[in-house]
Length: 490
View 1 (cartoon, rainbow, N blue to C red):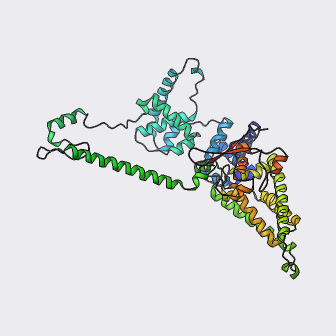
View 2: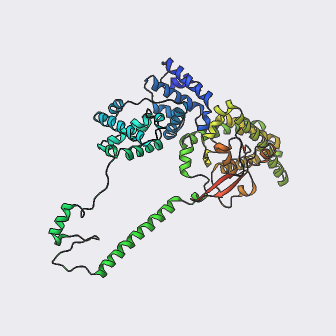
């Protein structure tokens, strides 16, 4: 998609200087590094460049509209924005006064300035003399963290996520700087949460000594001069009961966690957390893309069967033998595998096709079942539709037989992307091209290996693109496809 068209959809078409600046930033990205390595596609890269340019020219930018246009979740977009901005070396200027006005905390401005000044002095004092000259405090994360900690100390509520977004940093870096500031300047930024035992406070101690009849047992109940003191047996019994209740609650909570974890967690190649953090597209977008893709293929299949169908009664009554059906299935599998291997590999090696077409499928770094057929409509036409038509025509199978074949191929493709290594899976028994094999391809290190799909691995072995792996069990549950040799990224 052209940069001007994207700017028009975001309401920025009138700002010619802004569009030129965004184009300059995009060219700088292309020259310095490959943005697909950090998981940023071409459309998303153009949108992020427009946002950076809008910030430079102080033009209002609708980030929510940009996120919807990019097809990514808000979390993935923010992560991509920060990665690209840091890779370009673009520094966001953050002024304390502007932060105070934006978050409605103007009275914090002098406290933030004093705190930052004190932090710089103490941080430099803790460094060796040789490193003091290279210390850089100009990054906006220091101002943002100081502002957040001062607000917290003065019991003012501000949106932490919005503050992180404004300063253009990550949550991990924000947390790291926050810890450093609280350690060095606890007197300015720290908050005391420690609660003292009322019995050790002097005034309370005097009161308890003066009124011994009102002293309280540690395990509950009051000691009175009128009543008899509890026996040691009863105390022990009560303590045992408390200990039992604590043990019981811990066992119940542990069982609840194990049930929540679920059966399939023990057979996953990637955790749910990896699925949420690494994937660059939302599940809603994936479902829409799959429905569009299947609709197009259904129309093409109907047209193909209409053209090639034979309505004569002789052909309808004639049933091919099992040997003929087996030969047709094997032929169709070989034709489909050959077509998809070379087209798939070409889409990876041709930068234009990868950026604009095939990269859409690889937004799913951690694949899942219903994302198997999520790809660009043009890729579906080239890879699946034409490949399916060739296998149907060259194998000579009937439309009825082809229904079973394509259903089998679709189920196999879904299993290859499901991310589960289930025991007793017949696809894993009969085919080397399976879930773990294709998972290696989907990871960043496997983008130039294991192109074969969906049945055999022969073309990878013949042409040297086969990446061997071993399947190992992880400590926390599940499996990991680990490479059996070092790969070369050439």
